[in-house]
Length: 356
Image 1 (cartoon, rainbow, N blue to C red):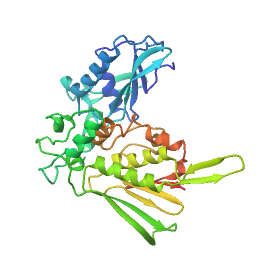
Image 2: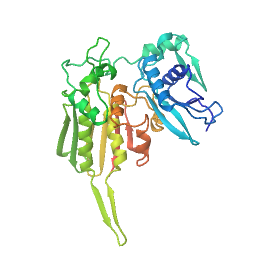
Image 3: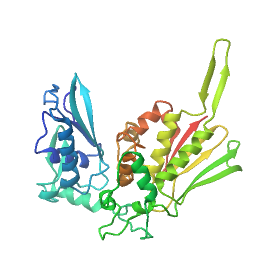
Image 4: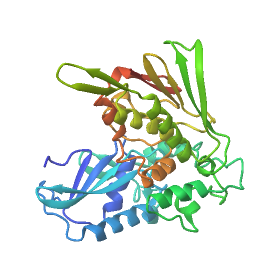
């Protein structure tokens, strides 16, 4: 294993300072990774009680850190040198500064990654980050409708082997501080006013619209699946028969296309009620999401897979339903099939253009 870095921390075993290291990575602009079962020298020692420690880790991160970091971390098992270790991946949080609940928003409870160590965050930095904290997020906006139902969401959870209990609204962070449904709940409810457009044009411009579909007014999960199904139909298979074999290839790489669609749905900025859109042309598909890059993220960090979820509550639900895998894995998957030039950034939009 490589040595510890500004983004990698090793722990021989689960210790009391887990929250300290977690907070430091959440406050760090690039996030980071904690390995449990590897000593400081990089030697793999393994974890005795994998399942027990994973449950403890998830419970401690969920209950001991503020603001909530749900949706900002992954906990998985990796086999390294024949031994099982726990890998905890953290995204950079959008509600900095994060701190240890029982120690409060102070130098005692707030940390930042400096080199290979978690150092107390200076008061001036705490005050600066708190002043800049994004307050206009979908989790803090009250739903325009409070009589919401979630039958579609419950069906999807049951299909994934999970049950939404009586307290699912609280557990999934679908409530404001006043215990009212927030805009995340509205997006996931059976009925809403959000419509996702899938358009098809004849030629390579927007002059001749030949097909326009709207998917929505329902749970964003259902709308996402509808868009995926429609795009899969449009992603035709081309056949070339040679003297030696029959070659088949789809218009677009299906793995990259799926990642791009889900990224657009999960990371779209819904605060101004502008949904993503999907457009087919003779020579390309364009996927446009509103919001541009998250605050503080550079294009280099975006392409390297650093994850700063704009809507961590949506990210958590999509991960629960196996629509999203590990944090930051989407863009690297897309780059296996398409170049960086396929991504166009503006102040308010991110557009992915994949040639047919």
